[in-house]
Amino acid sequence: MKLVQVAGLTDPGRVRRRNEDAFVCAPPLFAVADGMGGAQAGEVASRLAAAAFHDFHEADTLDPEARLRSIIQEANRRIYARASSDPHASGMGTTITAALASGARVAVGHVGDSRAYLLREGTLEQLTQDHSLVADLVRSGRLTPEEAEIHPQRSVITRALGTDPAVVVDSFSLEARDGDVYLLCSDGLTTMLGEETVQRVMSESSDLEQAARALVAAANESGGEDNITVVLFTLAEAGEDEDTLSGLEGYRIEPPPPPPEPVEVDGGGDTVLRPLPVRTEMALPPPQRRAGRLALIVAGILALFAGIAALALWGLSRAHFVGATDQGRLAVYQGVPWDLFSGAKLYRETYVSRLLTSQLSPDERRDLFDHDLMSEDDARARLAPYEEEAAP
Ligand code: CA
Image (cartoon, rainbow, N blue to C red; front, side, top):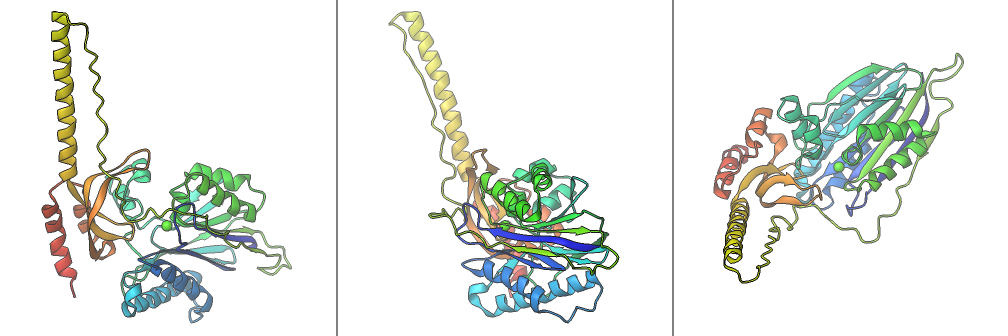
């Protein structure tokens, strides 16, 4: 097998001001990293991870899977060291999804929710299992995959590089076949596009450069709510005299300039719980007795409904639940854990903890993120024991 074409493209999307994604397209090594953290820390984390793929060579002689795991561990050490020594970088982290093409096999290693896919004979298959809150809930049967797609906390990851001195890396290898196309991508692609769309766009593209551009364009057309990164490579049967990497066409596409006046939507927002206008139409009939009485009854019923609606809104405005921010920190939200179809959120952050969801066990996460509604004090009290336990 030989690599016949590779392509990589990253784009800030239509909403975020910064691009915290990074990618590696250094055949036979490929990777996508999706950074997170305050200020510019997310960019620092994803770039540190990408750099390890270029300059860490101590694992070059290991077998492909061990080599990938070793590079990822090295990236984790570098990010953790930086996060521990630089207050501006404290709490930063990144996902990593990487592949190494080696002869007739492709090794994949990953941490977080960036994904690897394989397009084989026109069918797209997801190769990686997300390390995310909603993926945990789907695996335990508490959410359907369809519910997970629209879940307000779908971007919360449960494993990342840089949050702990060591990290568990998932890795596996598969037998490559002639014509296989591999796709590594950040969640800015997969939260905007369904798998059928990704499959169709890839199948319709004449080459990988065009596929990369078309995938990014499609994610932007669907909203471009997050940074979008794709890395693609394809393998074909090598001829007898051919060298593994001969005939390689490499594409590295520069990201286009950011949109002129982007709007930052991170951080909860303050548009939640705006009461819906209650429409009361009371066209009073001519002053006849019976009609007048009817109008009074109608008005009474409408007033009752308005009262119930107001009471419900008041109740919801006092409800709180435990959740997690996009950066993976535990948080208390006021409202109810739903997004409207318009994208408006029915909740807002009232408290963000220093504790990361990745510091909790899967059982603790299941217990805490049940989305039960409670008072703010009760929500804070549920976090307190975990925060005390984690305090230095
Ligand atoms: Ca992302």
